[in-house]
Length: 226
Image 1 (cartoon, rainbow, N blue to C red):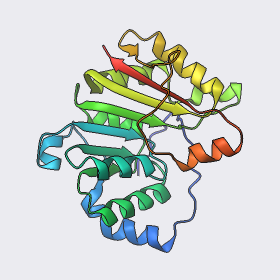
Image 2 (tube, one colour):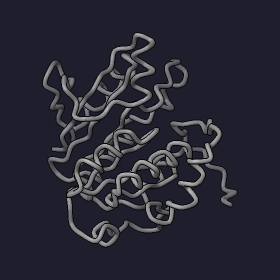
Image 3 (cartoon, one colour):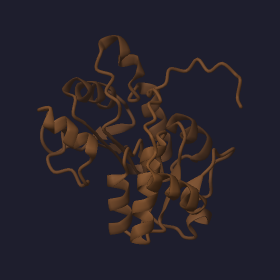
């Protein structure tokens, strides 16, 4: 156990729900196939997947709807997911196994730590960040994951011309994302309508559906690494 006091502000608070029996079985049986431990050096993804292919990372994949859909529909591409909540990991592993999709790998860790330790420069074609915790109260905005330093890290791991796609159902967070990324020298906003994406190429998520039920508008964005 790491006893060092970590003063870094984290973008999440663990609110782990109870695992279902099926999710626990998935973790017990499928983690050896899909799961990855904290790396100590940048990983050789070609060796991990046994091929060279376009590579997409989803940060905070929730219940895994988007990542599973992409991995199943694009068997010629490779996908990596990072999620701190085991319930979502258990769901995703089951969906991948049910579809026989072998082109995905998963971390159950903090994305900021994994990015720094496990990803070389220019190693990803796409990064996805859909419906991160909005931290709506003003005094908590410092906890939002989209900050200039985090954008620097995404710019480092994305290949030139790689895409960073984001979505939120909180208007204030969408404004915050735009403020950070429109001003970042490494990124170009490639949204098609007023800086937003009108038809995002992704599956819907539970978090999105919950927001829509509350009357929230959904904002999708896309940024290309210059």
